[in-house]
Image (cartoon, rainbow, N blue to C red; front, top):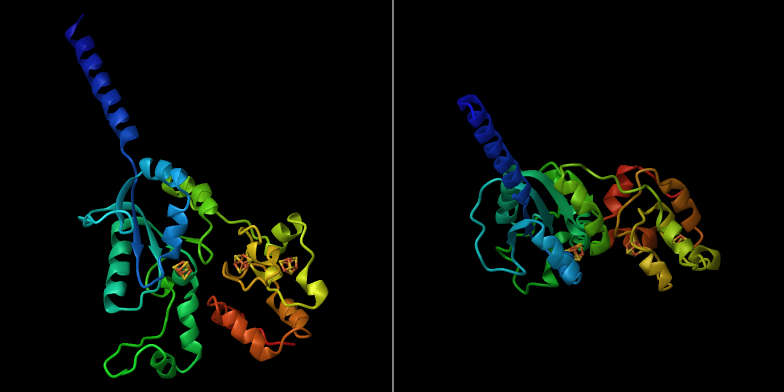
Length: 275
Ligand code: SF4
Ligand code: SF4
Ligand code: SF4
């Protein structure tokens, strides 16, 4: 074999090796929890073997529910953020996560919409905190803000908690650096598929038509109203919804219900008043 041919062969072997190493390199992922109940992380653990299979397909850099080891820093492919940035440390962690990761994804209602903690924004924060602490002097009591007030968010896994099935469905796309789009269909679609009688027909309130589906309509399937934990649909008709609900609940009841999962400010942003 000529010297030239040997050189080409060696070069090709090196190229093949490089390609193989590239294929073996797993995406680096971290799950970061700010101030939260950690329920969204538990929803992942609830997947059991399916979650372990997913965990084997990536390099998990940080997931405090399953390991004690300190995250040693460095660039990542994707960071999932659960919870509210309430403390100064939370905000620092969030901003640092954005700096080091190609994609930053909100994991659940608290991170995406303020969640249950956002209720206090609407009710004299100082009074609310007195229910928890006897002496409130020196206790930090900031307004609750969604993570997109601090950093750019590339994708949201909605819900309280998130849908673990949806996590498995969309993560492969995200790990390829593609941003999926959750179909803009209301909770009512899955509710109808489940064969439920509509609560509205019985003059019972339900937010289903204006809320993003994908949760298998778990609440109306248990004869409970949808309170909107997955957030408003991009093209939902909030104004029509409020007009319909007017005969079933007062303005105050509507506002109270929309506070539970941080919907109220999103609705107010649309500047829609009860007709
Ligand atoms: S979205 Fe719900 S389950 Fe997830 S952390 Fe917040 S309160 Fe917990
Ligand atoms: S019960 Fe609620 S979610 Fe189900 S169809 Fe009626 S409005 Fe839609
Ligand atoms: S039915 Fe509504 S409140 Fe219940 S899980 Fe689905 S989006 Fe959330």
